[in-house]
Structure formats: C-alpha cells, structure tokens
Image 1 (tube, one colour):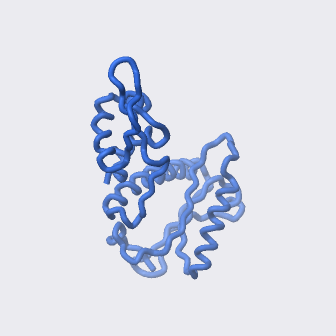
Image 2 (tube, rainbow, N blue to C red):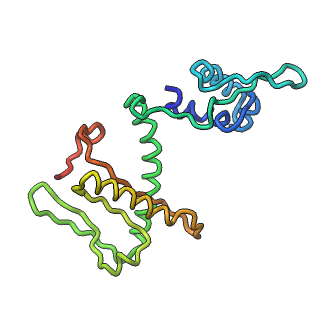
Image 3 (cartoon, one colour):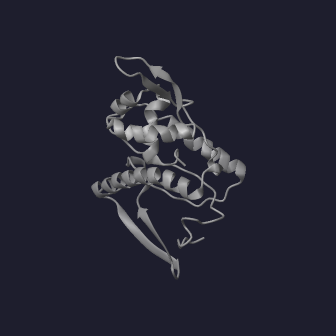
Length: 201
C-alpha cells in the first residue's frame, strides 16, 4: 500500500539509491526533517527501510537507513485494482496530456490540415485527417489508432517491431524534444474504465 502511494514513494526515493540519516534524506528531498520523520517509522514497520546502525557525529548519533534493494518489485496482479489504476493512470494521463498539447500545436501550425467527417451507417461516424501521401511523409507528428485482428504471434511481432523502431531513435540528441507514443494491447474482456464508452466494432 505504501509503495503504490505516490506521496509516500516520493519520501522513499533517497533511500533507494543510498543510505541516509533523517537530516541527509531531508536535504536530498529539500523538505523539513519533520516530514521525513513522519515517514521513516512507517517504512521501517513494513520492511521498506532497514536500520543499518547509527552514524557517529558530535552530539547524538544519527540512525542510518536504506531500502533493502535499489529496486523493489511487486507482482502487478498483487496490487489492488483501485491502487494500481490510481498510481499508473496519473502518470499515463500526465504524459498523454503533454502529447496532446504538442499534437494540437502541430496541427494548428499546419495550414494544409483538413478534417473529414463521414458516416456510412446511422449513429456511427468517423473523423479523420484528410491528407496526401506527400504531406504524410513531410509532417513531423503522428497520431493514429487502429483496430487490428491479429494472432498472438502477429501481436508479439508487432510489439517487438514497435519497440525496435522507437529504440533506433533514442539518444540522438536533436534540437527539438518530442514525445513518442506507441502501444498495443488486446481489447479488454472487462471494460473497467471504458464500460460506458460507445466504441463501434
């Protein structure tokens, strides 16, 4: 429960990379010692921090703490659904909002972009960018969602190729910063978040 509480996790971070006293952890976090003092006993009680001994100094010795490992692992299925949704979705939505802001700016700057609105059956419609192949090759942005019918082997291969493609461009240190978004997942059997979504097909 503490690991999936992002507020608590923030105060654990110094101890994941190094051993700290109360004051050195507070310095690393740039917060008050009283705030860190609130969390340390809670972390120790559940095994997220180990007391390594006391650091000698002028005056009273300071207890020294460290997390049991540099990375703590928890099976995904062991996390309560509401906790993992709250934890992961907050990060996903933060990056998605930044991506959408950048995409909207790119579309607004592109004078050749037009949107097409069409419908082939009542109550079902499609909204799409209408563009030439030449324009598609020239633009520096992309946003596409596609429903695919794949075998497990095809899905596995597509996932590998998507990661490899993005991996080819990592570390190029160009002058502009881009947010890359790519993904693949089988349609959910249980629509927890999307239960009320009206998605055709």
